[in-house]
Image (spheres, chains in turn orange, cyan):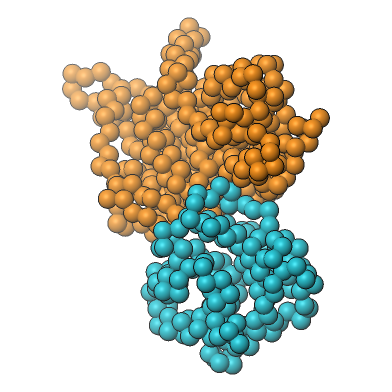
Length: 353
Length: 181
């Protein structure tokens, strides 16, 4: 049975995690996502999950490693400075191949920064973030509904590939309320023969580690991981297109800025400009092939990457377009959200030059 | 239909809950809504606001360029949002505390002395936001039905405050009557 509710993004994320069979949440409060743990704390008596406020994000990520290693469905949420603190642990988790879900409700940085909404953690989310060669599966929700849907999807993909997955969201989506349809709760029955839950007699010992001291073994592990990442890139790319079929100008935008850009597209169309929106839903794996296809279209004049940062996804768009068309950028930084009109003006300026 | 609105005032005046009740009522009518609060340092004694969009179609951007309706309950909010109202848009301002009049001639302005009304006629200044909301619903009756707002009040107010619902209802009615006069 599904229910319609008016919910904040953070609360919707928490409720979705419960419905998706959450077994453990380990976190440390930080604005603008503290409602997640608040919500889970209120709901805890009615459910069967473990909720633990860790002493820091460093502790929380290692609790994820431990509980996830025991096969539990685990999640943590944080915001930018907190996510930085988690990077060492995430690298370990990626190497040990522990399925788990992270959400970064991004705020403006660098440093302690601001509590206002930003998208300036794109590099950190999509390029690994910690040390070593690895990727997280990164979903970029742009509505409260997707905060729910991507929790389900994130958990599913994490299990499917034995890989950490994450939601790259932002403060505004976390704080805003929208109508949301909540899916039916699922009874989570993990099928994880690799989990370290105690060895039965006559059975090999399960061993989860990220330490391979012999370089030959470490390279073997890397080859295995890269093969997995390749499979994810082949199978899990997700994107959305809006009025791109006849478009001469393509806005590429993810998360909150894609919502704002959508309005800019409609305003541009009213002004007689053929603008379309391409929105990566998975920012890793990045929909590079689809962007390359669009770049090859004759009528496409240029791309403009619209982000709430100094131009991070811009690099991925440029790689995908591969010089076939110009790729420009428009963005605001430090927690400032652009208006639809600002984006339209940036598009118009580029189309005149 | 797409109505782009902003509700602004001091933290504690009930601007966020006014927006929430309206958004909830619209959702109950099957409309799409978005409610985006200002959050952060400005909420602690300073100015708070929320942007509310109501539409029967999909809402693309929760952030808008200009507003169809601005409801302002303090002077800084009047200064901030009066210039951002669309031509022929609506400005509702709390006239018992804001002593400066709006300047624009190309918008419709409504002065609502909600704080005085709530204090004198309802003996509870806390419901002044409902006086303002009542006025708004009278000015733009297409937004949501009054029954939906009453339902929203019941479903969004914590149960321990349900004894205040009749008072809130009275405040809504008084606000509507102010506009009729």
